[in-house]
Image 1: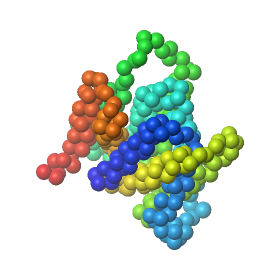
Image 2 (image 1 turned 180 degrees about the horizontal axis):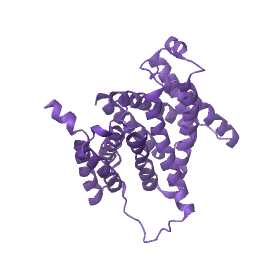
Image 3 (image 1 turned 90 degrees about the vertical axis):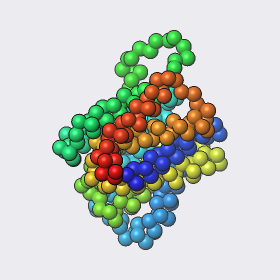
Length: 297
């Protein structure tokens, strides 16, 4: 539970960083590329350069997995940015959060991790998590314009949904089958190294310009971003790689805390259905973790 809380805090810090980008007119893509470089530096300082050098194994399966995830990270961030710009924040948020369906299904039916240990309350919590996410993410329409759900319209959010699910499912599988406790701190460093490399290539091709505000935004985004992945790997280990419980709990926790902070710091106003969704999210956490709550009483 401790690492789950740390993962939630790190992800909420990322959310708050992104929210500040629009306020301070920080360009997202160059800030993201800078953030990856900062992730590598942060991870190296935390793990120790000698430890990183000692653990690095360019022939290991996890090294190639890091290269794959590095490319997926950059692609997903870019798709999320485009979805936000073209389809709106609510659509991008729902698509990214609902992607938890993919690691949950893989954990239950492909990896078959702890599926037999879940009870009716756990399954109810998993299902209600999707309802809570939709309710909290729902925004009032500013006009009466009807949206036609064509293939072209849903292509971007669908891509965000799939890529977000690929990231979480891959981390679940890699942590289950490839990583030891000693490698957990090194693995994210190589993910972000490849993400920085791929992102820099994209920036050079697109002739992206970096200014001091973009670099500064990348710096304060990069520190929590590294720890979000590191703590997620530690949380997966603490939950015996049971993504069916971890990912709904993680997403619900992020939604509750980020919503509360958005109200306090960004003066966001919630509709009635949003408040009901937050309340339902609290119930979801109780349902998902009722065994741990009962054992601690």
